[in-house]
Length: 245
Image 1 (tube, rainbow, N blue to C red):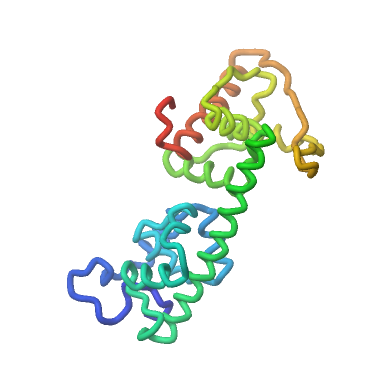
Image 2 (cartoon, helix red, strand yellow):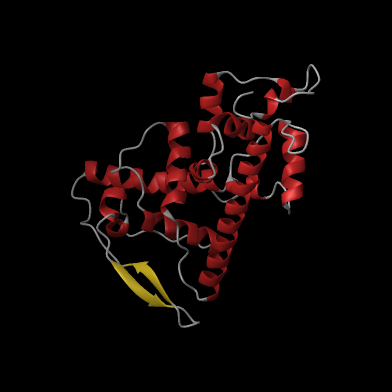
């Protein structure tokens, strides 16, 4: 119980799933199941590997799920006691520190989620394309690779293509892609940045338009189709409730 992991806490009955101690290999597996964004947030408040694994084991693997554990610090502490056996009142000093670290991570995740929701709402009101952050893009790639294997950068859809795909999903209006605008990660890195004004008069940085040559042979066409197909699979993984994918 050196790192404050919940199922290492005292007072848990025999047979209680929280009493199960994860092996080092299992800890690594469960920490790897966390979304990259949530893992980074937890690491920023120095949450230990053991507690990260316990959170993942309990099902808190995405920022959205983690943020909605509760509405207040008290709710979070109660959930940590109930689900992980971490007691911020009667527990050891290590457990109390672990609770404080997770609560700090929850506050940071809540701020980030609220900022993202506000940005999405503003973009929708101003009819601007939705922005996908690099962390969100990397999360989609990690989830895809966990299922289908490692992608080359030349096979991974670039940020602009994924932003278009997410916007189409939000609008429920999918459009055929021009092959000259299907950019993979390598090609998208060359996109210039431009400034675009919102209705409120604020300036937002947007990516400019970059096109690539049309496929010259069947193999080049196959590579473009691979990027296109991956973009839809990424969207499906990101939002499994989308009935039309």
